[in-house]
View (cartoon, rainbow, N blue to C red):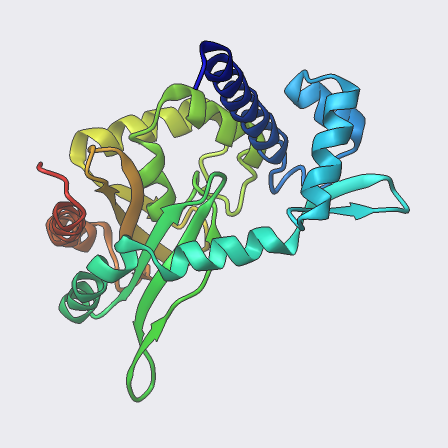
Amino acid sequence: MTSTDNRNTSTSRDGGAKLFYKMAAVLGCFTRARGQLSIAEIMEATSLPRTTIHRIVASLRDVGLLDQDGRRQTYRLGLKMFYFGSVVIANLDLNHHAHSYVLALHQLTGEIVHLHMFDGSQMACIEREEMGGTRLTTLTTIEAAPTYCTGVGKAFLAFQEQELILRIVAEEGLEPRTEHTLSTLEALLADLELTRQRGFAVDDEENEIGVRCIGAPIRDSRGQVFASVSVSGPSARMPLSRIQGLAPAIIQTADEISCKLGWSG
């Protein structure tokens, strides 16, 4: 291969990488709060030229990653994205390694145990263990939970960079779910600092009246918090004194799952 061929190959590779990043930037514009976007809105969010946006959007639509609403001239994420997300969840190391620990925590506490991971906007439920009327029920779902007012969410949020915290706050708006919701940035940041200090988060009827929840962070092999595990139950059965007693077991469960994922502690 000549030097000219090498230069052409390198140029082609660089061009392909740049296009990929531009396509990723377009897909990254879509959030739960901004589920449908026009070409102009995508341009504003990415700072890419209109011709580039038109070309990328057309390609993504052709392969099913975007859908177009012809009446409103807007675009939304396509069902192919849901398919990819389902494949990711089905093959998660988290789900495989965490199940026995989640089950053991449920049997120890007798309360509902949730395993969630951050999906880029909210906390997606990977597994829920609860005791029904006659038997133990394992539920796997992609049900989402807010980050700012739940035990699983705050256990994740407390260990993130300030930039991500502010983005999530801007997207979710700190909508008061109950009279106890921390609906100002100052109150939330103070609570996240307390979570970092003690190693667990508390949802004190912030998401639902009559329900308290304790969450602890789960780390990947690099030590980055990306998921969390929690125990929740009726407030009458979960006074603050019991929360303090349950916290060590929840933290231990989160740490054991993290170690299974390669975290060295």
